[in-house]
Image (tube, rainbow, N blue to C red; front, side, top):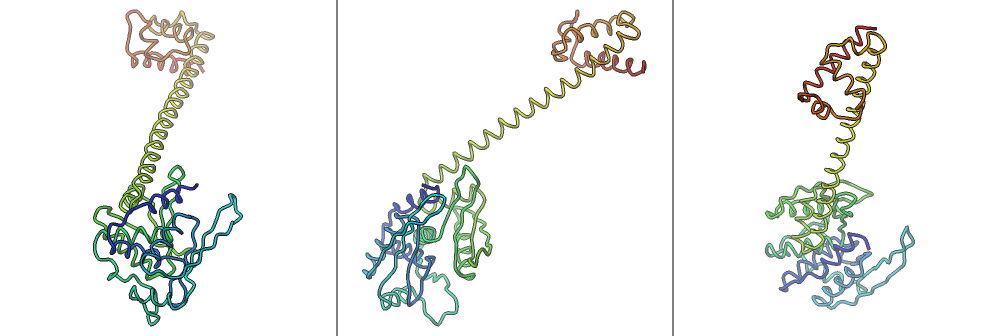
Length: 306
């Protein structure tokens, strides 16, 4: 099961504690379903939980004659598509007008009179997401969207989302394949909205996935930094050893001043040691910067011999 279906399964279990909230959620499901008009009302979904929720709410509020069909769709993984439709055109018209819509309106818009209060807004958005929403697996990327059939409807939805004080959302709209997609890409906004709509468990899954990604990124950065330091140390050591070999073949290491002779022999015999470790082998020990100064002097002398 996909993460989006998990979210819809959790949302489908949310309780509406009043008639007005059931009414608002039903309106959200209808308004953002595949087709909502005075002559046709039907919804198509991959989630059996959504189909059952849709049937339950419509039956409880209006008792229409409903037909449900399930078909197996061949894709990468076989999935069931559930289509729920109202059979009687007169019942479609009755429900359509019940929510304050008319064929005289040029475009389908959100009728605010169907959302009484903040809790009804929660229920409405839950219904809208159940009908047309989707959210990506957080292990891949962060993306939540609502797919609306009309531009004005998508704008109305954006306005409603921005009004949620608890979430501080900043939705955007893009036209995709003839539909208007309202989307969020910020992980915190997505988790806030899912919690707000009634899917706190799935919201927590996103937060856990994000925390895991951040820990993995920190570990990768640390490993890359360590590898870079090792490569840098190895490169510096190779340059020092080359200089020491050149001096040994030209003037001879014994001709060097005692401090340089001492560090040259130590580096030649211990090519894998860090500067700090080399400094501790000297008597008396010297600092890392002191070792680096002496080795740099050896490189300068070797370059003068060229």
